[in-house]
Length: 339
Ligand SMILES: Nc1ncnc2c1ncn2[C@@H]1O[C@H](COP(=O)(O)OP(=O)(O)OP(=O)(O)O)[C@@H](O)[C@H]1O
Ligand SMILES: [Mg+2]
Image 1 (cartoon, rainbow, N blue to C red):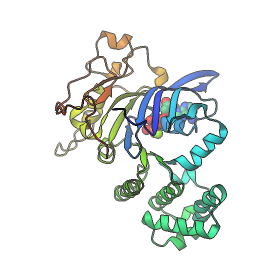
Image 2: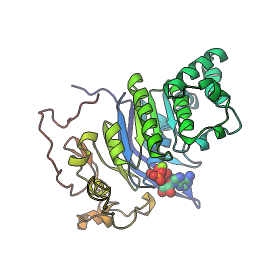
Image 3: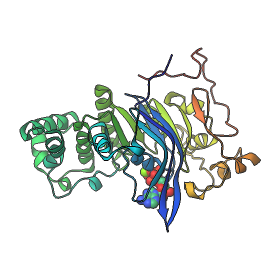
Image 4: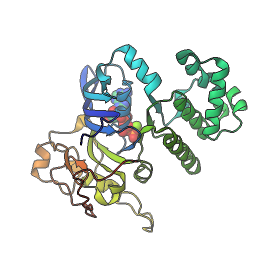
């Protein structure tokens, strides 16, 4: 049986940015799919290329960026899209939520203007109807006193409230894919949980797909169907979220999991030795090789390609055995059903 085409399919994405007149690689190789309606978590250390990957999906890369590979949204390649098609993608199909809402909202305009503008100018909705729509959306994201908030400016709202406004703005576009780049990282723990629950509910109600970027592996595993792990500009492992803890086979994923405090461990961490490398500092071999306790000679010489197995994909010459082997279902490589 053929699998349906995923909503988003990133295939061997490569991105360079100009640095002192020379192209510098920031994304080495990203392969990633987000099926319609499902949530994929993109995790990895700072600088690994998570935000750059999300931005590439909307072609919101810094000036002079060059991309290789394909980014297919509903079968159409974003990297070669016409300006008109790209505009439609940005307005109607894919919405993005950022870590810092204040950096993405005009401070001098009211929340009401911000929220209704896109509906009025790009969708031709009448101002009255647009206000009713955004009032309902604000209620949905837990802002009860919508009428008052619509008249306020961003500086009058807390970070948590402003992020809810950004979620409402994203939902107003009725997109099919949400790119959420650390949407809760800047918030306090209680607000984080509230905002995450709002995103989760809104997604479930609408059948919205999501690429969820976070440093928090446990959070990613809790809200996503699958997890992709990035290191030095490459996706090094991809697997079902419910297999993250027991099924991870890449030494980097295992090291990341071990560097989190385990419940009852008194908060002890096993830090990964060395520092994470940016993609442009990696040699010809495995980018994680210099920090990997399992590395052998070939790891320094040859870049490992992603290989399927155990329901996921691992780019490693010597993938480790899963902590708990996967139960055999007779369904081949496909271990998890999304839903
Ligand atoms: N505007 C830019 N110009 C040049 N290089 C950049 C720019 N933005 C990011 N980079 C570089 O691209 C690489 C990937 O950065 P990216 O922001 O995607 O990482 P990230 O995984 O999102 O990290 P974080 O977890 O800190 O948000 C890094 O090496 C970073 O230094
Ligand atoms: Mg980032």
